[in-house]
Length: 44
Image (cartoon, rainbow, N blue to C red):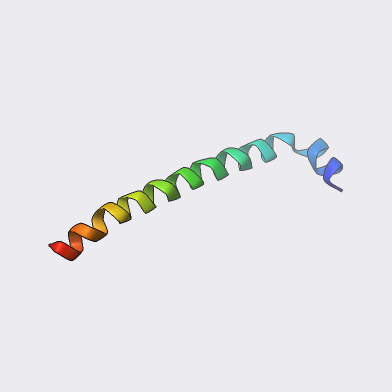
């Protein structure tokens, strides 16, 4: 079943992988920003 999907749209899988990497990076940046802002909000 997967072989047919790769034959029909191999580019879509690459785009999905790229989008997944970008989303994961954005999530990491968001978590880092949250960790930086949380202590300041508590002390402030």
